[in-house]
Length: 334
Ligand code: LMR
Image (cartoon, rainbow, N blue to C red; front, side, top):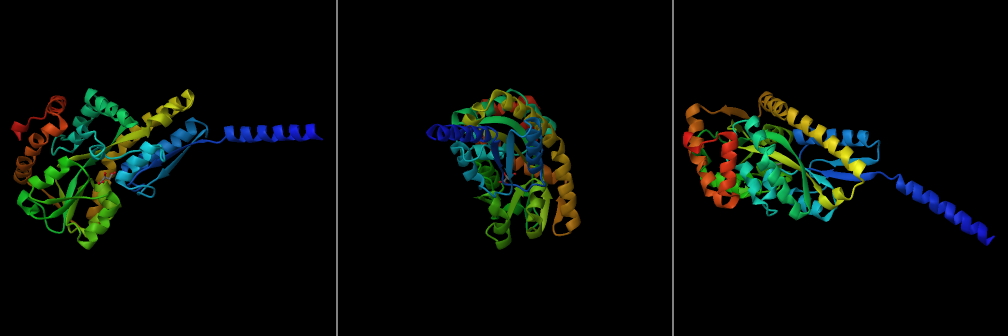
């Protein structure tokens, strides 16, 4: 009788072990934007590829729209291992202590995606991702969003138009300096709070690429949107390093392939998504879209390029110079 009990116990334990061994590895991928954006679609694409390539041994749970965490909290959650994957905007690594990432926030430093890609795919981009490792974070890829517009309830055509306006920004010192250079009052605030802050007048205006403006319905509470293209907003896809290093090698390799494919996809759709979002804002008739004249654009550049020098000590003079060299940017030519 006793022996029978032992055997049954062992059989039950073996079944439990087998069931446990078949449990998929779960990757929680948290982000703050809507699913219908370049980042949201990239995350969904990664989920599909990762699950397909690992034949279900990995399950990716995507949590969009700050459903799990807001901006700052999500980085803490990743470091603690409560989530495994994020794609925060590059601006958000400054507060984490890797302030060199704020170079991507410098106004007018990139004219287009090609210039930006020279930096993200070159030694500068790779070196920056490497810096995250001391924070327990592994940088896997750069994903694009796009070039920012400015919005407010008054038309923003010249730098003077910003005087005294409370403008929501991400928590980046470069963006703070940018708004101050325009004479505005920068207000750092989590992304999930922006719509309500605009609606209730806690802030007067904001900046973001059209895909974020449209999917958060900001255009419904902003009368004017200026196509300024004054700065870039993009992401680094990151994982908890300990989690990633601890994955079985074959799984990690399959996930790397899924990430490569998702990166190609996300960066391919970013411009189209933003163009379509802008078109949708235009069609909604809720915001008037302002195109700057060459003279107006020149006035913006004149005021904003000073931020490069102001922030050189924080970001690193050499780093800024190496970006200028990669892209051909010359502040004197503005
Ligand atoms: C913002 O806070 O404005 C953006 O970083 C949101 C995002 O992730 O695109």
